[in-house]
Length: 415
Ligand code: AMP
Image 1 (cartoon, rainbow, N blue to C red):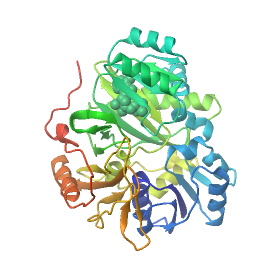
Image 2 (tube, rainbow, N blue to C red):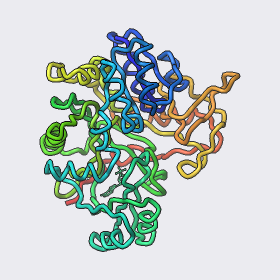
Image 3 (cartoon, helix red, strand yellow):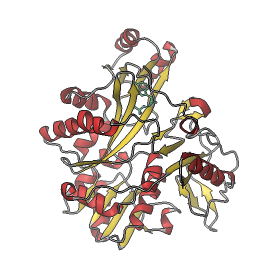
């Protein structure tokens, strides 16, 4: 099988590791990729959000499968353009990707499907937003209605800050605060059959103990020792299958990766958000534990044959990834600094490039994901932080508490 992977961040490097390890994948292309992916795949230049260009590249490379990593190409209709060429593609149509591209659309689907989620209002002006904030009370949750690369959400006790975010975004969704630990559940689906991957947890805030602003994600771990037994079955029954059925009913079946972001509240799991693609950096830990060949799995989902796919197999133990971020991230990351100590196994490249002389440099806010597995969460965490300690990058920062609460048995479900 010849595979073309679209994207160039940490998630795509993790996908490339999985695809390259699949004996059924005999040629891997990535566009645009990054220096880490370049060790596993032939890199091509493309604008990932250009449907015509990506479809042409899929034809030119003779791809049997196109895997689309980021959300922006999906929302832009890249999967539709590739599918129109008769090539299998892992990633939803633009219509189905609205599950991520529009918070209002996602809420509408959830309501129609009876999916448990926070109560919410779509607000297009300040007066409506203010009324919604006052109805729900603090902590206030205000979400930009469009795509915001995971950074369009403000959760705050400060009403003025919440109102300012609403004013800056234009149209927002104001919703009830959901108290409880968060879970990311990835589901591979062909639109009807659906296979859940291992639940993971990510860390959205930039600083230790969930301080500072939201980011794209500062680290992750899997599995979740504290997750209630039966959680995955419950979410598949109450969230995933009703949502997939509602999208089929609307004539826009969802093919690809349905990312269910949940809060485990006193009343049970509640959906915080849907995404239409693998999460970054949870993918790094989930795929590190997946033993089933990735290419075959994604191909089955892309060709409507997932019901015939064998059950997934998982490695024993745990995985932890710690993001090393550039100075100034998330507000104003500095790029172009030399990165050293990141050449060995376990360094997933998120935002790097090679200078003309071959030196590895930072090229984004999240630069590296130091990723390790271990016999248990403690061992995986120690190994991930050992990797981090060898990285040289001026001004970089990382969280020191990834998976710490889980290791200490301090993650609790309210109620
Ligand atoms: P989202 O982009 O919707 O995932 O939101 C980013 C982050 O904001 C989530 O990972 C949560 O930590 C937080 N968040 C979003 N919605 C809520 C909510 N209703 N209650 C509590 N926290 C939330």
